[in-house]
Image (tube, rainbow, N blue to C red; front, side, top):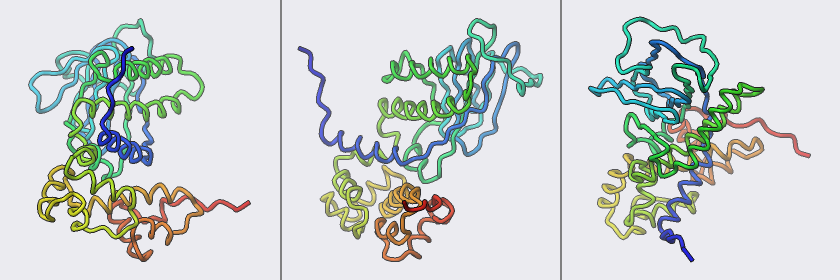
Length: 314
């Protein structure tokens, strides 16, 4: 009887904490282009603040990056992922045509049609989420399901998205948007299976010296946390702990504490009947004013603006 290798308890804890973090993120992906492109098609983006992906449903395509001498070829089922929305060009041949191309009125995707069937989407994540989750990701990632550690799952999802795009049935845009949320999570899994250290959050959760302190904070975020307390739990000096933590997470320990608390607050604010002071205390703040100030600094907007409307009591 074949037995699967056991996942070490430390790795299980790291994955659990990352799962909880991902569960609290509202992705809100949007598919902005679905179509069959023929002839000398090409499109480009100067870059921005969104996370972008291109899925080749059929045919082939080339990705051109300003800092790469040769374009990257993509085949059906491949995904081009841009975690930081880096400037790039996307076209149907190795050389970018000089003539402009009008892709504003795409033809429906057809599996046997000439050219390339393309599905493009993006999502915008708050800056604090990107810092913890994607900060170390490269500018461009090519995902080929046949070479992916999550190939079977991601291939099934790609086939479902392609079929939806081809059928173009009732609610297709909404379905593709939600499937794009799932695709993003599979891409995160793909990347982190290959190199866990590319996510600052997973890197610190997996670090043998720091994970005890971080796990203790995550379990009890309302308590009074200081660098000295976390360093003691990690059996390190304050300076050694801070240096190691900042190196992995790219932010000081107390900035991480505040960021994690505010992400929890975002979820709690979804309950329109939640009391603001109660949320502040759950986040370790003794006053609502201090909580509001910290929330606006990290999230970029006052908590009242993202709070769900109060629901009538039965």
